[in-house]
Image 1 (tube, one colour):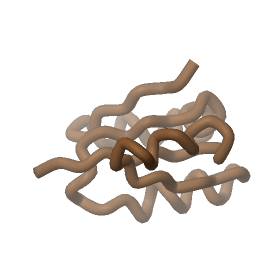
Image 2: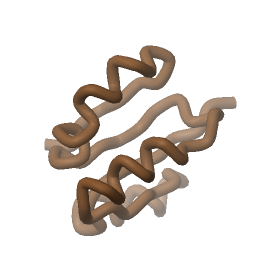
Image 3: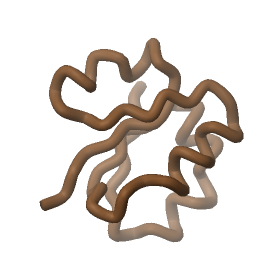
Length: 72
């Protein structure tokens, strides 16, 4: 079964944990990249903050099996 994860600033993703999303708080570019690289293989959907999406732009295309959505 696929799971849902979130990567980004705490203020953007804090409420998703209540819905069972595994939230990876990442406030810096380095932390965002580390969170992406350490996602478990069962993650099928990743909710990204706008900043996280910008940092991970090149990485996202390398994982077409993992759906992503960017928070406005």
